[in-house]
Image 1 (cartoon, rainbow, N blue to C red):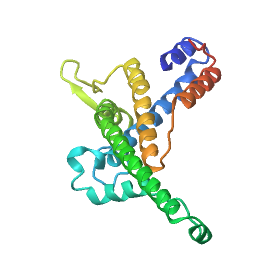
Image 2: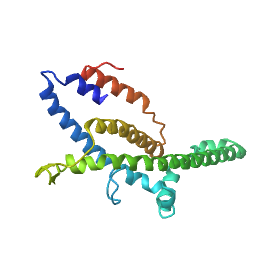
Image 3: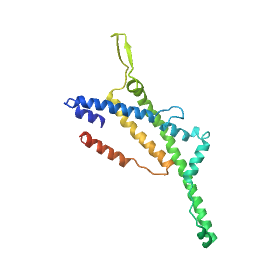
Image 4: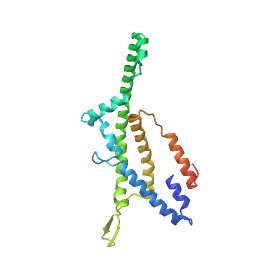
Length: 214
């Protein structure tokens, strides 16, 4: 889609203004993606930091945190009022409690299934960060140049072509949104599908930029 927008405005009288907007949006997008995919120390509020405790190798040293999350995820009890406790037979109250425990066990199993899904996101997020990070470091945050002995001039360092960067962004964004949805499903016990919101965002973008939705 990004390349379609570029093609729409290239070689037109709107190209100079579009180029300014394009560069600003591209820089902002790369910086935002880099922040989300920063694999630094544990004070970095990035997706990789949030995913790291769920990796199997890290679970033993993060056992206390995971235990708290598991307990919060599975904790639910049917409220039995004092009046109900007095009026209902004891076997009814006991049946309710047994069902609560069965439901809690099912939720604990679901918690670890979702934890495994989050852990599976790690390699995809790390690879996405590896693609975007050099562009951020050498082009957006710092415009690096290198000396060319042949021409005796300075030139920008070699970086991927813009078309390749556009393609990488289109590949990376769904990975990020999917990982955020997986984390939300565990932290908030929500089933969040991104397909509908993704379709709406694309539809709005196509309409805004005036390109056909192919």
